[in-house]
Image (cartoon, rainbow, N blue to C red; front, side, top):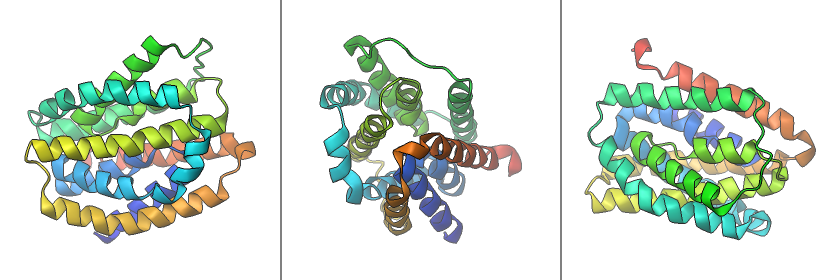
Length: 237
């Protein structure tokens, strides 16, 4: 539990200064310790409460039409992803989580940049993929991160859009788990414990965020995500 507390703080710190990456940092640790469903639940509770203190700032900067399209598509695809998760072997789940994290980092580090317009069909498709990924392996962020961080939008708008999307997604996921009778009380309580360091990390990360240091923040986030995904691989068991 103490190790999860440390990881939760680091995850909050990453999300506070970059707007993304909290799940990719925390979930490999909680899934390895608690199993897929309980690990996702604990991570989601911590991830849900962490950014609350900085939501007001994000609301000012977000592009609401895109956020609505992303969430609408996610609402449709998320239950499908959860149904697939319940069929997966825990070891397969952990390998899948690490592979998706590494694939996301590879795409971003490759220097890929989307130069076209963020059209409604593209945004809907991205939201649908995010819901499917989130339901199946617990990380909805990769499709959203890959599209928006590779775009030419201002860093402040990108950060706000990703942060608010992930906050509402967490609420969606907990509702789907409750409907499927998978919202276990022990996992919820662990998530509440992890929420405290996560909030602290978010506040500190938001306080040190400077748009002029965008590239530095991204590099730090990438390094932490890579370490978390690598260290949680089942082969180390």
